[in-house]
Image 1 (cartoon, helix red, strand yellow):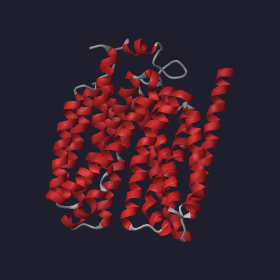
Image 2: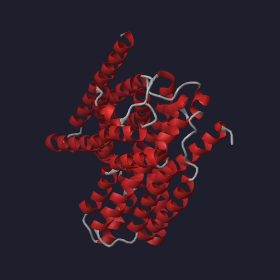
Image 3: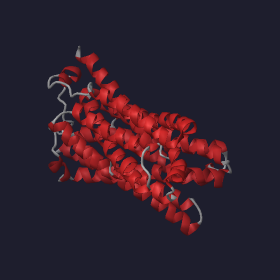
Image 4: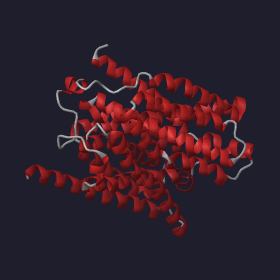
Length: 404
């Protein structure tokens, strides 16, 4: 098979596998029924969801090591097996603790293994369109979340929550494991043939993770990732309450707004901004994202007073939040090369986990102290401002390096 055709087959298989990963983010569909069936507390059930995020970086590191030493095909097959069994076993558990192991630990590890491997293989097959390739992979998660949520809700209604989880787990195993057969790295000479250039970092070589951690640019990017992702995560955690308490929407309408913010807009932003970054550059893209995020968050208390304003604000923040997730994999590939991107990006992705804790926690604390969402929005806008300064630092450092 010709290289140009083969890479699209590999790309499609990776997208299919990552679409299944959306189940990890559709937990709210099953949460209420699981609480009733398992006779556990809301906190115990929610912990399973938190754990499904907590081990993502570890899964990504494990996936990266397996992919580089044995091959991405084996890594995705292993990740898909762990992920599918995690969802399947969640349909058999009888306590919150067992749910933490199945829907928490197993789903998180499997998700991380496939996520890191999928991104790495995609950017290696598309060296001339890294933004598009990585953006499509991460966008698949958002699309999958919507699909799994709708199918899962239908299954819960028809066969109960445990039956739904069993059915979904079996489906994921039957989809991901066969798809893994097609997820392979390009031959050593394939990328230059497609791109006409060496597939390496901006400095002309691929960087091993121990070298990367010694570079100041990595830590600037780490802080920039936190600043870029925290505002979106903060708003997602408060989205329904903002729609109810500020805009005055009902519970059903407010819940649909959460879907727009965390699903549709986020998925579109991951692919859209990542593709734009191929044209105008990663730092220019992040600068635009941070400016829009800051303006949207600082004006959110005013624009959220009306339905139209709420739609505008949620779309803007959702698109930009997705843009951060879509742009950073290719930015990591540009800076540190693609050969070791599985582990390199896994280490950088720890910043997203920090943001996942920082943004929602700070938002909740400020809301409790001030009995208002305004302080949280201003804090988010300030983080976006810090991110702008960090992006300028990277730009100046790169220019000085080139000039030297």
